[in-house]
Image (cartoon, rainbow, N blue to C red; front, side, top):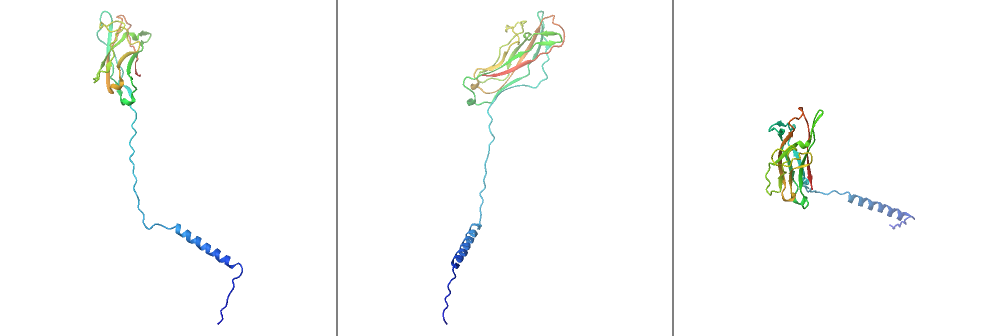
Length: 211
């Protein structure tokens, strides 16, 4: 038998190469879609602590319904009405690093005039005697000096009353002692003997200054 040689027609090799190229592309696509036979997971965790807020210097007054002054200690020079200031608390939760060098704080009090209808008793007729209730380990925290009504009470305290800002409690060095301190004051309103009878009202304002 004779061997027959077939000649490829013009252009056929190009078709064969194109087909081979398509096959190669198909194999490559199948390889990228392969899935791993085994998988392992790693647990992740994190602990997020609460933010620590910066310390603060604060002033609070114990809950109260106001102070009713009652007559006590009147004499021939004046009628006297006394009462006790609700406990005032100063708290300093700052760290030494948060307190500037040489810083100090003070609480002062100032009263308004007592008014009753058409009649008025000046704030200078009200005095007080501060008392620190919390011991100060360093001695840097102390109560203010007593202040008498303009009608002297015989104690020798300055007879100026609470018409201006008078010291209740203070510290000379805030960075040397932090914590919480309670303070109060005995109040005394001394009026002229012939004061007009009636119901009088005033407001005692306490202010905290941080320097």
